[in-house]
Picture 1 (tube, rainbow, N blue to C red):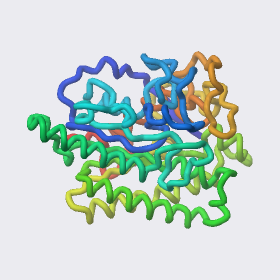
Picture 2 (cartoon, rainbow, N blue to C red):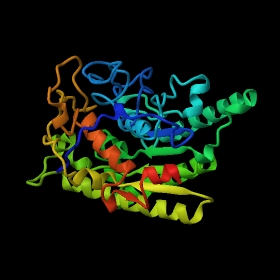
Picture 3 (cartoon, helix red, strand yellow):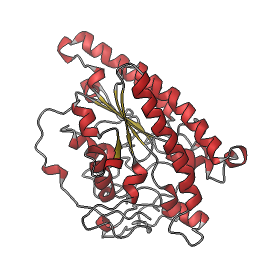
Picture 4 (cartoon, rainbow, N blue to C red):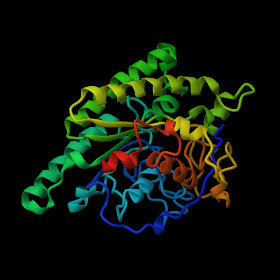
Amino acid sequence: MWHVSVLILSLSSLVYGAPQVPCYFIFGDSLYDNGNNHALITKAKTNYPPYGIDFPTGPVGRFTNGRNTADILAELLGFETYIPPFASASGQAILKGVNYASGAAGILDETGQHLGARISFNKQLINHQITLSRIKIITAINQSAAVNLRECLYTVGIGNNDYIGNYFSPFYPTRRIYTPEQYATVLVQQYSLQLKTLHDSKARKVAVFGIGALGCTPAMITMYGTNGSLCVDFINSAVQLFNAKLVSLVDDFNNNLSNAKFIYINSYQIALTPTPTTGLSITNIPCCNATNKISFQCIPNQIPCSNRNDHVFWDAVHPTEAADVVTTRRAYNALLLQDTRPYDIQTLATS
């Protein structure tokens, strides 16, 4: 169960100085997407109410009621504005970073295809190369705009959809092909190549988010039942196989890649361990009407719950802004030793 509670802190009250890193690049799925799926033909888009009900500009592509992890982390790092999505990023704004994340995206290219178009991690890496080419042009014209990419922060949060939008989805044959152990190995082998590609593009400070307790999402509980448990245990067990291999990969990169500073964010641990404050008491009921059994998203234009700070889940798979505040702050500044490895994002950013 998501035994997590929250201290709702107003990050908008932060006093901004110089950001802790010169730029911030974001790769991932719907937990981080802030508008890249807008123009795509896909069911994985959130350009309608009640999404964005607590965001100043309304439903602009985030899969929650307000800010997501990428937004909150940008604030914690000291950026005065949110990192723009690749779909609309232009001009010198890209010197501060770009968000490439895409709802339904996965490590595997085929993941999420039942929902329509999406930008897989491989394609996000290609888009990053486009950004780097644009940065090169800008800095050639304006020498004072030079950016040291090795000092920038890179976060990668992907793999969730490879389970709920592939392995445990009825639209794919994957479970008949691989055991959970074999599938975790396939994913991490592919992930290893992708993260090495990022490293080859001068990324040195990389925070990799593990997969959360997907078996505790309302969508998976509704689809599979819990057999008397609090969550769908066989889904969580499969996720933990992947996370264990990812921890080993991060350790290997730090030992063997040139000047690499990779860290692992233990999303699973953070979700299942309490924060000693009050809040987030409703752990298994979505805040919005999320009866769509394909995309697990909110039914358009229906009124969501009013006590959003009490809910872990906004729709059937995505967290509320309140839950994102808790998890992101613990990724940035670890509350427990097991939250991050070998250290937290704040240490990574300032090292």
